[in-house]
Length: 215
Image: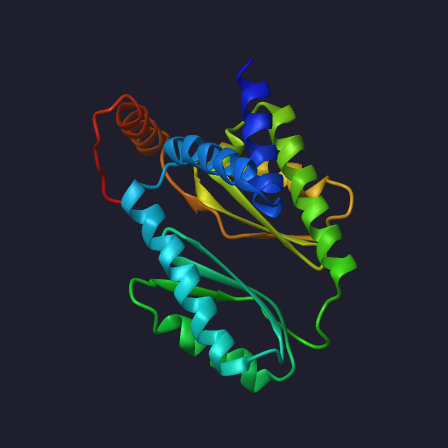
């Protein structure tokens, strides 16, 4: 039952945001809210990460315009930059801009200097991400909500706050998923005790008693 719930939530997180109309927006909001309550980051950190992504995207887009295809994924205030830019100077400039965003504590610059990917390539990357997430649920060895997967040109980037056994399982799932060419491990390793503490905090918060811990 728990695996089925996770699979449903993950499907909603991946698919619903791409749909149009009022009901999908409400459904996506509900799904996001439930998943947020299972996240090991505090609500405050999740909010900061969303703000970081928005600011980074706006500032880099203003500077580079349509000269590249750049994605930003912030987790625990560390930002992964993926996509394609025309020059090494543009790659360096994007990193400098993101580093200057308030609350950013680290940058993983994985931009590729080269032609911009097409819609077909990006759709395939999204499909690969969904497969990794689905197989994570099926594995039953870790909570897939704790691992964020970003796929770019067949490379799967893994972010999250996990124990070493959880990280090993997540990496193995990604590495053995059809279509994945390479896995980049950006997971933050925490102790089992810390994982239990964070999970307990989120469970308590879900029950209407907000609590915060330092990440």
